[in-house]
Image (tube, rainbow, N blue to C red; front, side, top):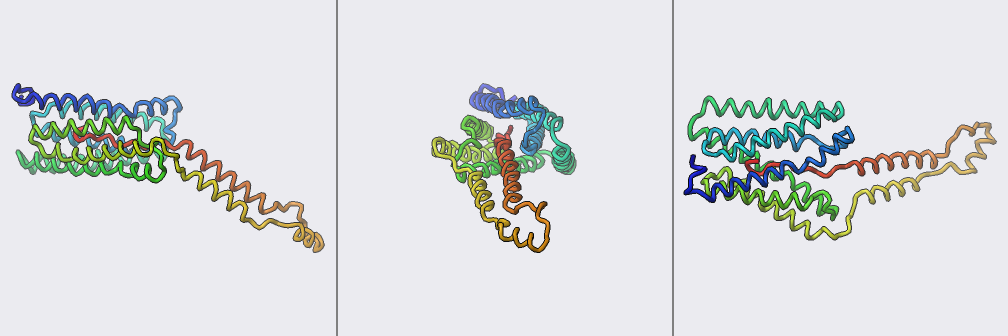
Length: 295
């Protein structure tokens, strides 16, 4: 195989290092899933990143099979398919009925629908180099879309001035992985592998730069604004004053069962505030879609 040809030692180096780093990236959500198993609840986590990662890994593995001489591409995506399947199984096991239905629906849509359609359309009507090119550019399109997804986390970091949503270690390994797979694609003279990792590299660098800027910054949490709004709203209530009660008594109206509006609204606001605080406390770190070009 050309992959293990002694004339391509750097190709082997970049491919092996890409596998090792991508394995670490794939295993990044393990602590979160250990917590899910311990709590027997998904705790607000979403299954979308893991379903999309499974879809992407299956696409890249299909591309590697039809391209040939890309065994390191096959190995990492095989690992990715296994790991993501385990994640999704655990999620479905402990998810609520609604989350479980959404996950199954997404699996049917992406894996049972879109992936099957791509497979059938490219396998039978196309052949040879044309099939490889079509599947390769489909993989590029998916990878670019997936790499663009973490931009929402970047905006969140800038808005909140908090890097808790963007762990430095994960950003660092994503950047390293992009470098390795870019080198692998460049040496393999495969633009479909190299191109998406250019975007992955710049995105990783932006994330690490933001981490350096905001790691010691005081967080600007939206929750504080929500609390203030609730307090203000609770004060802007027209209470039932004593004059109204006295006039009602004079008219023979029973006010024994009347609850002052201020008390009722304050109780409602306290309940709403408690619910929002609970939701914020349960809000998990946004897990990036683990797609490192071929992984």
